[in-house]
Image 1 (cartoon, one colour):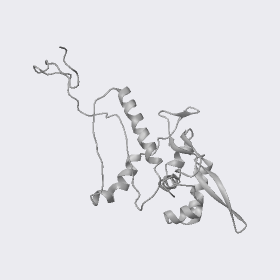
Image 2: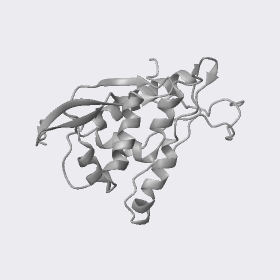
Image 3: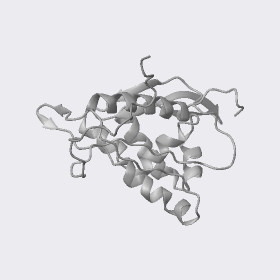
Image 4: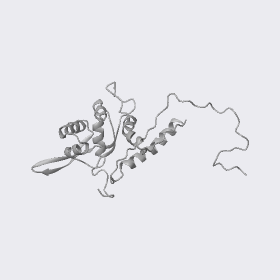
Length: 206
């Protein structure tokens, strides 16, 4: 794939909300999330996926069928090979998500899988080799500022998804934003600002 080719090489929606328990269970399996991740690069056949993940074709065919039934994968094109139509599968969207508090027929859907748990497992080897790049920060901010900040992060994630695939190394990119339920905070300031101090970036009136 050249640097000018689109990623992936088929049309798909930007986002799809998962609205059934079947969909959430489908995306919560580690092997199926790996299949979905591979198809961010390009459409692929069951044989190609099986080769990539080093699993039997029958196993991959089963998981692909689960994803197709759940509306997460679809056949994007076919190719005739020795009188057989070879199917190429692609994602139905770049991003799948479960709405907070989502209910169907009065039943709350199970939570989406925890990306951080998967990232912790995946990053262990890189951490041991001194190749893990990561930051953890905490800030007391209003909810609306958190939403604004996450919108910017979402744009970076989309940019990462669209990067042309090349090179020999696969990189994981994990981001998150979550409320801290029991984290210490300083009380509101009850003393005057130090003499001569002023907000940085605010010009003093002449």
